[in-house]
Length: 542
Image (cartoon, rainbow, N blue to C red; front, side, top):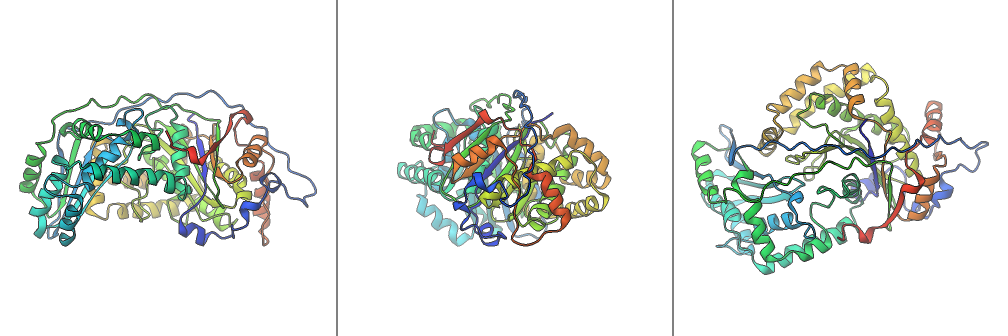
């Protein structure tokens, strides 16, 4: 059985704080040890026995496919005046040397923002602005993406700038210092100090992949970033941003002539560089708990598991649909959303994901080119009043267990299926998104991925979904990461696993209250000796 892991962090996005159904302003003053009991209850519920936590089972790594050097995806759109560029290098945080975590992301940022041989950083911005052009870079574990977008009337000027960013970066020491400072502040002030949701997600990676190249934040660590020199950046640029690691995407007002122009320019990149990182097995940890202490008002929760399932597995479509059925990102029909938010008023968002998820900007859609050799399943529950955090965690486990124990009801199954068949059309609504999916197909070996997804959904049955879920998911080996104000109290509650009944400010239906009794004693398989308290101020420090 695959093992699940669980991360809990505080919600910080304005929408969550504004729309959460109950006021959390006084929640931080609640004693967590007392909050798990109902004072007037005539008889306390009996806690379920904590399952024995088995030893971790490493999960083998399967490398992604390696397309030919400068492999190109060309998607002309008749009558469209916009040209979209999407260049994906098979390099990311896994290529960061030990002790210099963040080198890949910092190098990409310096290339995209630090100017070129012909243009300083400010001159680069001044040149792009009147074109209304876009140019950006993002780095994940294994991929770094350079995006560009411009009207065809400005194509010639933009093409020169876009390729100069890759071929002739300025490497200005002052720009390195500026971008390094930004990257350190993103960890110290934003990740640790403001964005509790992201802190929980990064902590989930750190727990799932402790000791593995996936473990550190894509943006690096404080000490790692401070250790990076300009010579490190120049050497890294030459060894990982190479032709043999690059897939080129062009869409919109494009043709074979533009493809040739671009590839002729990119032929100036080094043909080869450093060998690809050989990833070790994922640790397969479970049964651990981290409680990260931070001054915060509410709690957000992420549950996850590293597993071997990827898009190139025949079971992927069924498991991905099961995750959507459980809770599609920022949609309202999922089981978790219905049960935890709508029926119980616990929080703002309740979502599940069949592969590692990053949100695409401010949209509700998944980011593309987050391809990973080793994937993970996750559930996010956020934000929750601290006294209800344990109940919410148990609720997520309870409803996940229901998903893995019996076929989904036909009516609910059909609603979720109809929605997702239509929603996958929204996923491919822009040229950049269509390019992203096509490039992912090249790395995963899944041609026509979204068409295949829709076909599989049309043929899927509740029984087939259940069978696939049972092959890949289980709640018998959870890990927890909490970000909380009173970490010691929460660690104690988690260790003794006392029942956590919930009190409501208004009456609830009898069937909800009856189910709450089972949720309040749902066992979380974490050994008392495996609970660790950590300080947020130390997170991603080194």
